[in-house]
Image 1 (cartoon, rainbow, N blue to C red):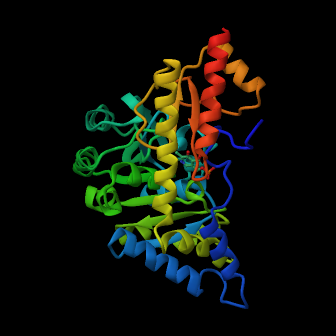
Image 2 (image 1 turned 45 degrees about the vertical axis):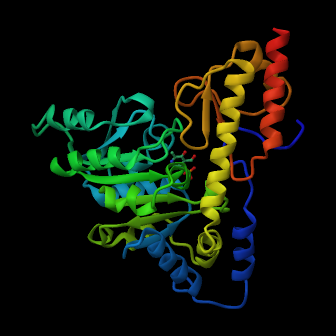
Image 3 (image 1 turned 135 degrees about the vertical axis):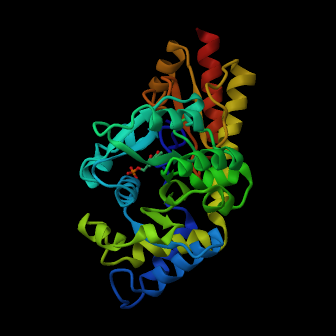
Length: 346
Ligand SMILES: Cc1ncc(COP(=O)(O)O)c(C=O)c1O
């Protein structure tokens, strides 16, 4: 392997300098524990500024916890949660949403390009209304989606209007929310509360944080007793400043958006290189920082033999190539050169 960088996951990247500096700055003296410290209060305030609304904010360790606890807060055990069939909550959270909600059922739906549609939601809600069916109560949308596409504000508004008309609450898995904001170039509010999203799980790691997600309740009534849920689930950090300070580091100078825009740009560079130089078309539009492509068998094997790491089990079965906040253009170009060489030799 030449550069030490890979395309397997945007979580392979390390911590960005802004988050690291904030982490070190927070390591000074004694401060109050369990979130009652200036770092945590300021990070929550900064998130309220970013979203331009008086939302309620909780910091937890990871996305599985954020999603599961947020979904549990939105429904009862006899309810169901509508999600896409590729949704992380369905495929990669080891049943945690069901566990933390005491048994609420996920209803996984198909949808083009990793996205749900209002019609699919309506069909899932109205197909059964009898007592034997788990009553749909929540819809969860992943932004950016698991296959690297994004929901535009008008798509979100249509989805949330349908959901709310049908009595559902709307949760957003925003593990790559920053990539969606950077890709669309719209205000964070336009992709969340102004578009009808009730709760956002805002991912930190893909933007360069060492750890952590922010659960952001735009409808504050839904956050009732959420702090107890976090504590009970082992998600209340005693030294909370080390979870929250890195957020301040990336939020205070908008480096979260800069890092996300860079990752997106690297994905576009990769996608156009695959198409132009190697004739390989992506399986989905490259709206964020993920590129999905069918690699011929010899190319895939050859790349692996040369040390490249990437997954092929996510999405529609092609190779998933994720770009991170630190992906270097040289890494992309080296990968493309290897693809071209392997294709020429095949
Ligand atoms: C769509 C999506 N949601 C949530 C997560 C967060 O998962 P974790 O629990 O590993 O932090 C990820 C991580 O890759 C993801 O891709």
